Image (cartoon, rainbow, N blue to C red):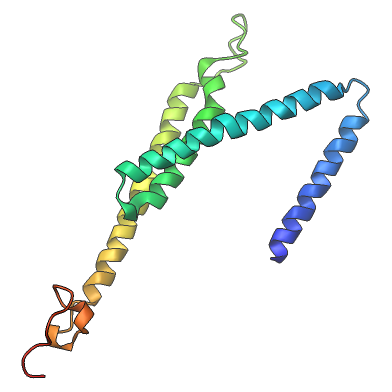
Length: 163
């Protein structure tokens, strides 16, 4: 709780610093700033959240339950990275007479980063499966007669003969 309070306090201080700095700017156009903030809010709530919710629904439909948290984190990370990198990949702002403005192969680099995200997700899923299998294997060492009735294959039924 203290960490959250400290983060909120730091956020409020940074926002106050930004507002004071903006109001000290003689070229500030408050209507333009409000229009920009409204656009960012609309873009976030009407576009970005809809895309993330649709992606989460797709993950829930096509990915097994045990892998959903990892798949959702990977999908959200890949979406955020792609949104940030698309202007660089498409070369927005690159003047044709100056090739040093955006000199890197951004498409190849985005593909490499997305492959790293996918690889990390697969590795996390495999590690979770390995932990789950080893935990399940430890419970199989007891004979069936020693297990609780709910642990027996078939879920229940009469106790074994001899009891």
